[in-house]
Image 1 (cartoon, helix red, strand yellow):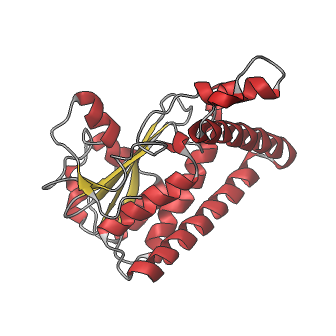
Image 2 (cartoon, one colour):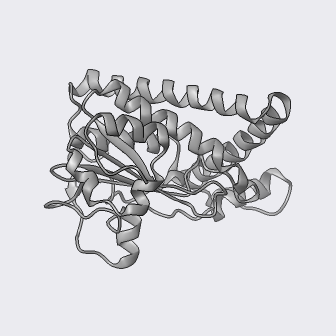
Length: 257
């Protein structure tokens, strides 16, 4: 990992603006990022699955050439199997114990994971966790789940914005209607961050929706309530109810939908 964050060019093309979430919130000053200029397997770039699929073909006794595989191909294949297996298991659990029980377990799992990660970062960098370290924490966590996460995280003087495309935790193409599971897991993580950091304000502003019809999620972290005043109304309305309640208690206004 590079030793210090570097600037992101801004303004960008419309495509780049959406990739980074600049269409939701523009930066105050120069936007900075940790990993956007990596030159090999990395977050923030659309790594095609062809090499990973070649590996699958070899496993299934079909034609394929392992000598051409790179580390990135193996990682992408791992992401593919992780996602497929996870949602097959969730579907099995749903049939066995019911949807509400599965959602409760996912919420608890998200809460534990979010608290553990945030407290670990606080131990390293202090309280309150600085904005640049929040961005570093998010990029590091997403990197550990493989290049399929494709996060683009930037920060400026008053906020951190993270945009994810086709997250490993989101449903595969054949099970997009199961989006409620990943949204529940993510909600547990998001709210746990605020439980761990008394002055933090964070929310999922854009997500894949109840039926998983899109693939992008956009998250915000800040210590300044006025940042929320700059959000489009559709983003305010999209913030989950549990998150909205805590934000309101911490001084964020205009979140009534």
